[in-house]
Image (cartoon, rainbow, N blue to C red; front, side):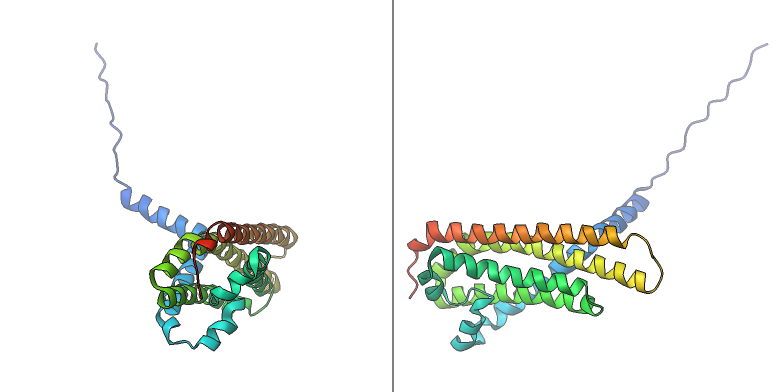
Length: 220
C-alpha cells in the first residue's frame, strides 16, 4: 500500500510596504532630532543669505564675534586671533545648547540655537559674496566651509543630546521614570565633551586653512 505524501509550499507574502514603514519609523526614532535640528539650521542659513545684503556695516561688525563678517580685521589678527575667534564662537553655541538641555524651558530654545547658527552662516556667505564677489565666494567655500560643516555636525548632535537629557529630566520630574538618570547624565556629559572636542577641531581646521591660503586673498 502506497502512502500519499503532501508537500506544503511556504506562502510568500510581499511585505515591502511593512518593511518600509518600519524603516521610516526607525530612522525617525533614531535620527529624527538630528534631522530636525539640521533642517532648522538650513532654514536659518537661507534666511541669513536673503537678508545679509540689507544689513548695515555697523551691524555686521558687531556680529563678527559670532560670525565671520569682518575679514580685514580677522586677517590682521593673525593665526592666534583667527583661532580664538573661531573657537570662541563655537564654544558659545555648544555651551548654550548644553545649558538649555538642563533647563526646564530649554527644549523650546533649542531650535532657535540651530536656526541662529544657520542664520550666521548665511550672513557670512552673503556678506562675502556681495562684498567681494567671486573672490569672496572662493574664500568662503575653500577656507570657511570645511570648518563650518564640521562644527554644524557637532552642534546638531549636541542639540539632540540636549533634548534627550531634557526629556529624561521631565520624565523624572513627572515620576514616569525614576531610574537611570545618573547614567543618562553621565552619557550627556560625555557626548557634550565629544561635541566640544569636535568644535575645537573645527576651529583648528579653520586656522590651518586660514594660515595656508588666506594670504592668497587681499581683502581691503
